[in-house]
Picture 1: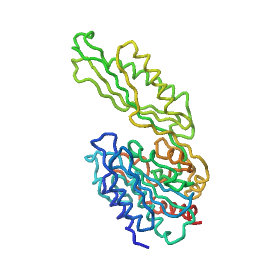
Picture 2: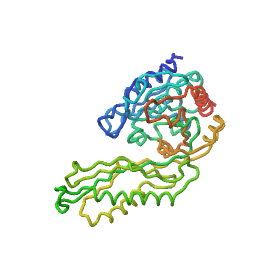
Picture 3: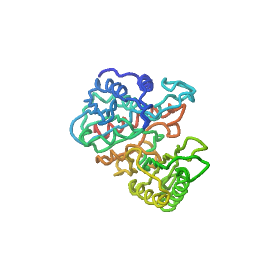
Picture 4: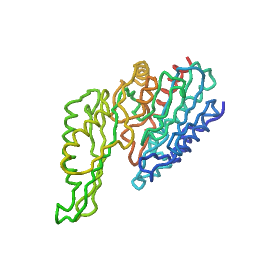
Length: 382
């Protein structure tokens, strides 16, 4: 069997390879170098590699690595990108793996490049045995922005697998449901004029006051109408994220751009909520003579509810943890739609993700390897 790099060496190489994805073009980077590194480690182990470019996203591709024949089996999935960063807020080099105490620091250590290295570390000793069901290692593009990688997948690319584990940071607790997310842009267009006479223009900022009041009222209605006690935050949320408008105190504001997100519970529909927002805002602004446009910043991600409990039960046995719910979104709905029982489980905590000084706790390394190895033995080798 070919030698593979040591675990720490693999994590070091992945962290040192920038692969930021962002909805803002100035921050967005290719993920191909990460895909090629994983290819170079998996191909000598006997995996058949497909690098699948994402339509309309130059420099972006999914990695689909298959071993074994037939249908069924197991997918071990993760995303190859990271969020953007505020490098000046880091106490260590974000692109250099730094070990301090019982932690590895670096961008992607927790969310979620380390997972790929742990998968390879777990499977390498098993590769000399016959696989009765196929194993797929999936590395997607753009999870942190548009999820275009997951949206582009087909069941056939992954041998119509029965089970999928997504290695997002859950502190090794099996997650069987999570909220969806929809990011919305509201653009209000008025007309400018000298601030000494309100009749010389049409203030988009005045209209925004009505919009904010209505959105806050709708947020409270969502909270009262929908509840799911499986979640720590057991209601849908609406977050007013950012606002930009106008250019000077002595000019009537001619435009305002507002961006916000809505996180819906399982059983709710993103499109229906968007339509409700649109229907509420339009009458509030109808008498102002303004142009108003509400649209998605990118396609929304639906909520996730696992399609079966066989995999969750097995992971509960392996981890000693009960299935749970989280508020953050993942690619799980897309794998579920492809016919797989899907559970989200991985090392690290979401509390360390998306912020300076991201780290993974080294005490979760060996348990993660043991869990992955046990899954491969059960669903691919036995």
